[in-house]
Image (cartoon, rainbow, N blue to C red; front, top):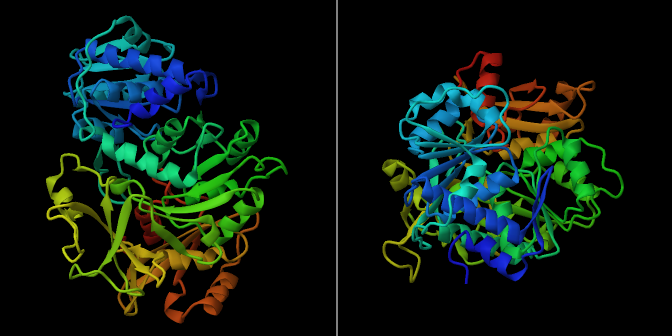
Length: 531
């Protein structure tokens, strides 16, 4: 029985210790080796004074030391915070301050960048440095103890803090489009339930090789570790610069499972796929947003043997739905049904369950519902509320996640995403989903990515503004022809008022399109207000 997130690794190590658990660009590590190094980290942290529920942040690229640090900290009874390695120092400072981080694991090279902000983090007590020194070590505040990562191995065995499945295991900071990111607190139970649910339909097993292409700070990125370890699979860590690096790794490592977000897949289709590159892929899984049909078809052509799983989720509840591959062509645009052992409700503004066809808010109940937002009781009360009372047999006081996402359900129970309440474009009296606009754009030749936003307009309420990137910088799409395509495909009120060709769309730390930043760029070009 797996109760704690660390059981996903340790119990697999007991059963198949010689199997490879992880590979990075330098090393391959067996389950037994990774389990032993994880234990050493746990004992080392306790020996250095880490208390139960202390927050331990890991600010590293994807490498085996990052994984051992994350699982070792959880084994010690601490709360982990995977920090996206692409964040700037001021963003890292916000996380360290907001979570009152006690221990920071990073590299010598990253410390050179972080040095100036550590003085603003009074809770920080221990700095653990990975890798070889690169020049003179930057000065750190006098109250911060600095040690090398290898010293954790020399601390000896210490009693670890008691942990149960209801305890907090991790805080994931979401990359919201406006304002500072907020931390979502997850329990061990959340992480285990999510891994077991996803594995039940992806059917990961010991023969699988999962590519960890997404940041470990992203819940879907971290779940490549939890689902992989739960299944005894090999997890391949990749820090890539170019899409072709991904294609090469898929081929060289004979990857069987690839989970990504729409911008990642949009980048992948720009690369040349040698005939055998995608032949090993058993499945492709999309999360973090709508995958345009044109991108989907290009990926299916590149990996013809791969089953495609379209998933919907939010950090506050890990995953909510998935569309079985056999329904992909029968139900275009659907986000599927609830993942195993969870329930999804569609609820109207009165809290009543919506009949088929009626739009309502997606409400998620089950074992993956997070503990709430870290250090934000008001935000927690707004998003984590009692499950709808109209649901027969639902216990009083059970908390559900009210997603803020609008969906509808068909007669067979399959769900269709309409849009986020705060992303909906309100124009000419209509409420328009940005994804609907973007889908039309992706149906026009030469467009790699698209993002639609609403900008203030005195006559319309909001005008639809569209940003696109070309598949080839040397052959930008004809905007007049694109608008003609829109006029042929959608009603007049859905035709963009403005189209801008950008070299790339702004992305948040987790690789999703940053609509707030896109809105700011387009507002500056059009002279409209950004909000």
